Length: 273
Ligand code: ATR
Image 1: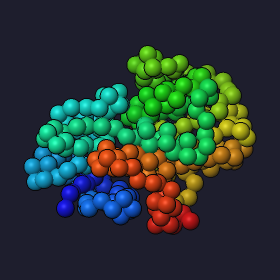
Image 2: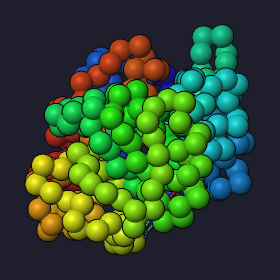
Image 3: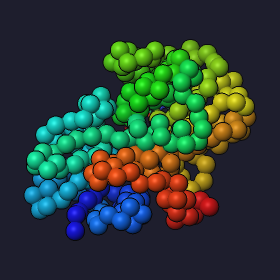
Image 4: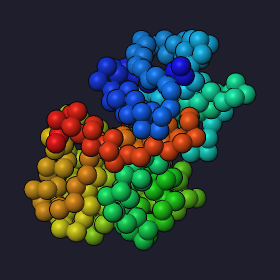
């Protein structure tokens, strides 16, 4: 049977095996999908061993995405732009192809929530790996403006300069930000510590869409804060998780699974509904 897995550390609580097993059942594909948690300095060896032993493809998550970028034989254009790899496929020619489906997953999830990206003003919070992966797919949707704000402003400036050729992207400090924005995407890891990016409440209005790339069983700190200040449409990163997985599955199997039912099952599994 074709074997796939996700590399990460820690990865024990990953939902990817659950999601891909449902995709395989739905599309009647014969495959198994597992977990691998190599020590941080043993990822390269573990990856090699997996493919030497007949593995067909894998996902890569924290903290290995940047390292995976350097270990594959060739890169898709979107992985090259993202500077990170979350999906690897062994091609029929024996080449390890590195791809990145995170940004496509974000855009697909935003669209499935009915969020309009074309001609919109988008505020992207954070300038780490998650922001980098999102930039090209967001700019491809032709927003009128995309502003990056980050605690360390120089990192936002560097990212804006790097993606400037793809669209109207600028960097502003949190203090400089002037609304109205149509969509705010939180790509920071602040919610992980229950912290908030230092955004002024005046930027939140009833028609704004709020997206937190993090997810948890209850509202993330950022989503609670936004709701408290009047945001009516809030979304967390669970849909993005399922959509990036669907994109990876499509890369591997050449068949696109449906995501709605799988997202529902995942929510039930997590006790969210
Ligand atoms: P990831 O790969 O998930 O993007 P990362 O590369 O470590 O993770 O980036 C984390 C991002 O969250 C950074 O933009 C970080 O800001 P700095 O560049 O200033 O470190 C941001 N971040 C983390 N905690 C934050 C907080 N409490 N408030 C605001 N931004 C925060």
